[in-house]
Image 1 (cartoon, rainbow, N blue to C red):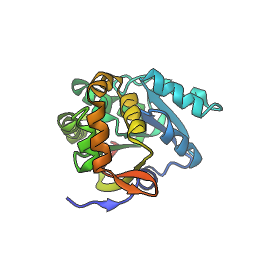
Image 2 (image 1 turned 180 degrees about the vertical axis):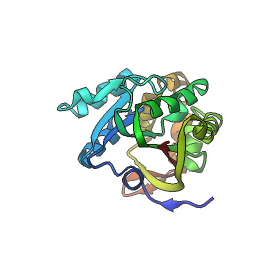
Image 3 (image 1 turned 90 degrees about the horizontal axis):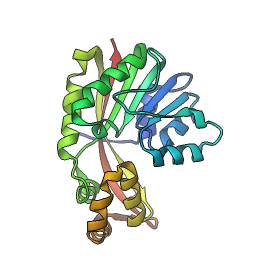
Image 4 (image 1 turned 135 degrees about the horizontal axis):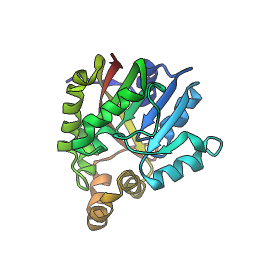
Length: 228
């Protein structure tokens, strides 16, 4: 498997070309990608089911609080054919396995004809995965997400492109990273409380030190589809 060195912004620019387009980010978290999309000239909309993440997104973007909608991927709070592109950045594997195909159907529903679905999913490789898997081993659920994408043509999507890339994730501290991964999925809180010391030890042992920060390489697969 070959990987190019890149990052999320370069990939979204390459495959989504956001300027002048209405782009819906499903599973937007704290809204970082939505804000970046807007900085590139897009009409960015975020959908998130986590109350804490929605609060953080709206606080970080006080002039556009209406851009962040409460909802889930398998039941998007948006009308038919209302978006030029849908992005799912590290979010498809958080949809319940039995609802992943429904989430892809919903993405197709809200896309205009010829619209782009961009899905980036983390791969189970590298030291960062080894740290997070101590709290939540996502190997199986990430495989299910790829299987769902394999079935996308049967839902009315045409595969356009696929690529793998690796990017550098820089973190301030183990504690900050712990808070982040629990914020993404609050169900991890109990496991984190049980294994926090082990988590911090593994984080500090495996991380690379770069300019006073902790660094991990992250491995990502991007799959790009078009509404047929």
